[in-house]
Amino acid sequence: QVQLVESGGGLVQAGGSLRLSCAASGSIVRFDAMGWYRQGPGRQRELVALIRGGGQINYDDSVAGRFSISRHKIKNEVYLQMNDLKPEDTAVYYCYVPTRGSNYWGQGTQVTVSS
Image (cartoon, rainbow, N blue to C red; front, side):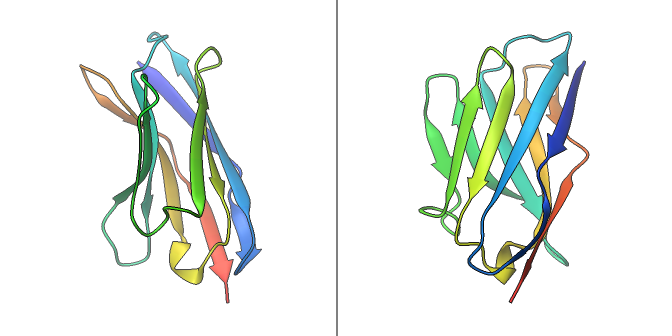
């Protein structure tokens, strides 16, 4: 079992920045990949960014150049630095960890960007 706890969401004006954090704990102590998804109002959940054990990173085109994902392998934490936020970034952001057995999700943290 894996527990994921996110923090760092909130309300920010367009052009502002936020940093999300996610701490993983549980019986699995090593993860190959960690990432972030989001689900905006009336939209499907979508991948925002993923970082793999070898350092490979993928970003959704809508956030590339504005968001940056990083991780602390020993602490089992993953972070999402979000800059130049836009109203369309408003969503619930979920921490995500895929494993061989299951995919794990955090409870979600709300990010609201006002225009």
